[in-house]
Image (tube, rainbow, N blue to C red; front, top):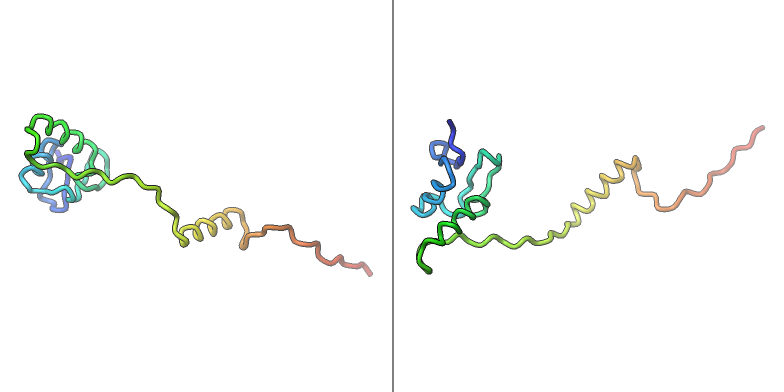
Length: 117
């Protein structure tokens, strides 16, 4: 059976969250080491994994204050502003969906009427 947590070295994997915490304490991996979680099917740094963070806080409760390692705090969620390029791409996609090649803000004036001879 494959271990749950895989790292970039294919010969190194860990079976559970407690093993990951032991590896962090032993400095085998650090907080920024990319880790693949087979259960979540995602790569992320060790310090950003929610189960690892929760287990680390739980483990830290049993230590004297000021001793041991601590994972870095998660960066605050910031509202990302859309770049000009992304805004242009979004507008172009909207035009394709509408079926227009160019945005038409006002209706076109009526064309000349054809006379019958």
